[in-house]
Image (cartoon, rainbow, N blue to C red; front, side, top):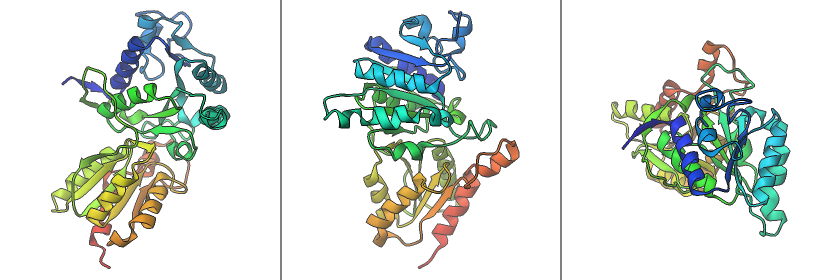
Amino acid sequence: MPVITYREAINQAMAQEMRRDPLIVVMGEDVAGGAGGSAGGAEAAGGVMGITAGLATEFGRDRVIDTPITESAIMGMGAGAALTGLRPIAELMFADFIGVCFDQIYNQAAKFRYMFGGKAVTPLTIRTMIGAGMGAGPQHSQAIYPWLTSVPGLKVCVPSNPYDAKGLMIQAIRDDDPVIFCEHKSLLGMEGEVPEDPYTIDFGKAAITREGTDLTIVSMSWMVNFCNEAADQLASEDFSVEVVDMRTTSPLDREAILKSVRKTGRLVVVDEANPICSMASEISSIVAEHAFAALDAPIKKVTAPHTPVPASPKLEALYIPDTAKIVAAARETLEYEL
């Protein structure tokens, strides 16, 4: 099986779907390379992170559309295009910019099916970058997927590896509801085995990346990889740790979480978002409400602090939940006695 990067997996998914369906269009800032871009020139860069490289060359600028720097127009254009029968992929360069265009997403696209009595579909995929780890500062490094997850009518993907990135992206493009696809910028260079042929991953189906019986760790996106490292480290100490990768936060695979916790009796939730109203809070609430009797220790949350993301590399390293912090929380939970 070919080994490609997370970035290449997303690009491959879009290209394969655009070949399959001529109604799919891509729009965003510099997705086609800017004014004057062409094969071998500016277009070859494929946007700020190279994710749309080659699409304009293959599909033309009628289907890969550079927009002005106006997020509200991009999202409005995407929502309107979806209503007319196209299947747009709209890029919001950094998730932090969502405040500029949130009305078009949560008050319009997310509500069309409901407000039109189920007679309208909105097959809009919104690609956006999330997360810290690259020294991009407080306005370009936030993990805001909990905001998006709270909106009825939106589906939210948070892939942690190249295989999931391709399968979830194809599923997002084929879905008839608006989907926010969160690409973690610190994962873009991550390599993994990815099938060449198109495939989909169902929304709302978590993955068990490590199996165990002593402790459950639930996480999503970049953090899953730290959780896997923590589970491997704890395995060397004879602790059996299960890691649950949510893959999507809306829909959320509640049953996978509850099944694992009922097996292990202990839970650590790892979430890069700020702690208040986070996915860690929501998942903890689900377990406290539906599996309290199964718990042998208090639930432990490992999150970023309730501060903006620092620009300083040393402070950013302290801000981000990492393997050492997860191991420490896991040990505390494993050693707790009722």
